[in-house]
Length: 334
Ligand SMILES: NC(=O)c1ccc[n+]([C@@H]2O[C@H](COP(=O)([O-])OP(=O)(O)OC[C@H]3O[C@@H](n4cnc5c(N)ncnc54)[C@H](O)[C@@H]3O)[C@@H](O)[C@H]2O)c1
Ligand SMILES: N[C@H](C(=O)O)[C@H](O)COP(=O)(O)O
Image (tube, rainbow, N blue to C red; front, top):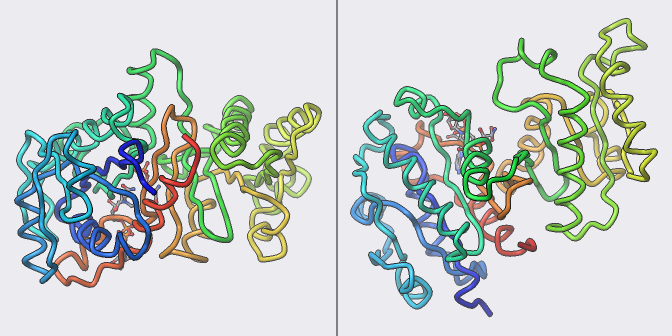
């Protein structure tokens, strides 16, 4: 039975995308799916218009924080943001960037100040925010910065994609492929592995997490013939963590570590770059996978997909990954 402490704070994401539509659809199936009360930081009028556009019967209620819990079963509670959001599904507008950023900030603040249990973010169109001057590559890094500001402590945010059969983590994130090799250092691999071990233990209840670390190069370097980073950078970190008693293996050739048999041997795969980590997990279960940020002082989840501008006017967006994100945000320990 949910209590006022279980409220989830939801940021609205890119208004031109499918975010508003899947929020409405998630609310409609929240009782059937056993989803805890959630509140959207956004524009109530935009959600009302989007509901009308797609013929979804969702009563929207503008709320103060203290009204959210009681409002939820009968209405979708929305805490209004100050910036306006223009409502053109499928059409990106830079003027929406301040509102998109404000929504993330306000929803995060609600969690950091204890008004909400966890944060669930809807997808943002990253380059639209960059055009406005947003300096963070994505939510992962932005939430790390907001958390550092709040706590005064150094934070290493870690992106984890968690599906029913596979969890993966990219050691390097939103950077160009030609920047990957120079960015992989022993310190980075070790830090990401330590945050991963800590959060799988504390938030996911896995006492001794098994971590498989991928190599960077084909065949994990083929004894140095196809690249030196695997032996020179990754292998010593694996050895160091093994010597401390952690269940860490690698560097594994990345092409064979995601097949069904291989997946059964670990709880999470640390991959060296974005697509090495995200292709397998999104291919296996695009509709059910959740993007989780580890290393924060709170729990953040998100659907694994993006803004899907190509279907934003069609009313066909699938809310499954958002439902999985809402469920996971509520299940994990905070
Ligand atoms: N968490 C986030 O903020 C986040 C995550 C991923 C991508 N993005 C952003 O989204 C934008 C678009 O990215 P993309 O095109 O690579 O990926 P995408 O996930 O938006 O779309 C890929 C394909 O999957 C379809 N699709 C996605 N979600 C769907 C759903 N719920 N129901 C039905 N079909 C769905 C789309 O229509 C499209 O054909 C980029 O700007 C990217 O930065 C943001
Ligand atoms: N890298 C993620 C993906 O492709 O699914 C996505 O861009 C989200 O990243 P943030 O959660 O950091 O915005």
